[in-house]
Image (cartoon, rainbow, N blue to C red; front, side, top):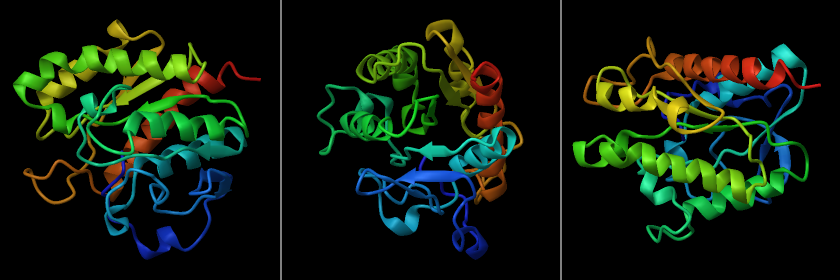
Length: 224
């Protein structure tokens, strides 16, 4: 998720302790909000705001003491079909960029997890019926091309006030994709109103914390 929760000025003034971000030179630099700043497929810079990555990375570092390197390469408003390896939706190809940049990051450490937060663009009845099949293809392709067959694939729910039918599908991810799970978006607040699909700042932080809890449970509880 690119993240549209409002950033406070204080959120942007300092580097995030223990957290690094893959920059536009494909090298780690101390992370600072907005975390989607170096995405090679993002929309305008001013649209990049608070994302779950902040709550996620800060909690992982606080609980483990480990250095965290984020590969934040998101674009808001996409469909899962646009992320397939053979998609010709956009140039540069979203999938290819995700793989290329993650491979660069893997020079500096071990890939621990893939976090996937998307789905608003697939919420129509026609797209919903194909969503999980396409997500399966995406997860399998990423694991193959990153030579990480068992890397956890964690999916986040969408806004409770708009996307209950999509969330029902997301909650079944572990039945379709090995070593996968989802995180709840219950209680994550609205950015504007019920017509807007985005979470507010507090909701982004809460969601990130839940991603962290999931990864702490399934990755760091068994990692030396």
